[in-house]
Image 1 (cartoon, rainbow, N blue to C red):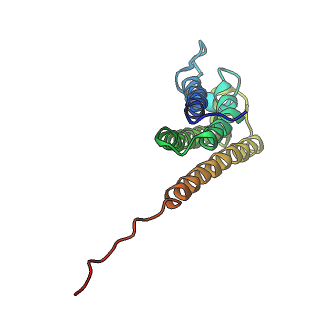
Image 2 (cartoon, rainbow, N blue to C red):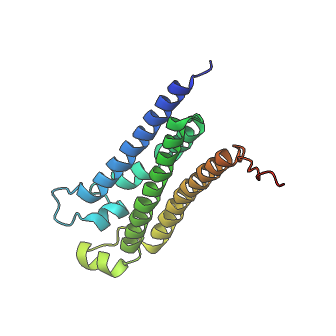
Length: 173
C-alpha cells in the first residue's frame, strides 16, 4: 500500500501530535501533579517515590522517543513534509530539555540521603538506585539525541540533493 504525499503528511503530523501529548502529560504530571500529601513536590515526583510518580515512566518511554522519528521518516519531500521534519526537531529538543531537568531533579533527590532521612524519616531512594535511574534516564535521552541528529542529517541530505543553479558568466567579447 503506497501512501500519497498528503496522507503521509497527515500521518506524520498525527504521530507528532501524539508525541507532544505524551510529553505534555509527563510535564504536567511532574510539575502540576501535586497530591494531598504536603511532602509531595516536584523533586519528589521527579524521583518517583510513590506520591504521583508517573512523570518518569510517561516521559522515559518508547512513544515520545520513537513517534517523532517515525513521523520524520514518513514525511514527504514536499513543503508540509519539511515543516513536519522541523516540528520533529522541536519535539526532540523539548523532550531533551524536559528529560534532562526531570532526570537531574530525580538525581538531586536520590543523592541527598540526609535530606530524605530528615524530612521523611527514612531513605526512599538510596545512592545506588539514584545512579541506576540516572543511567536509565541517560539512555532514553541518548536515544532522543540520536533521533534528533538523524532527523537533522536527513534534513541536510534532502536540501543538498537539489541541484545548485549554474551561474553563467556573460559572454566575453
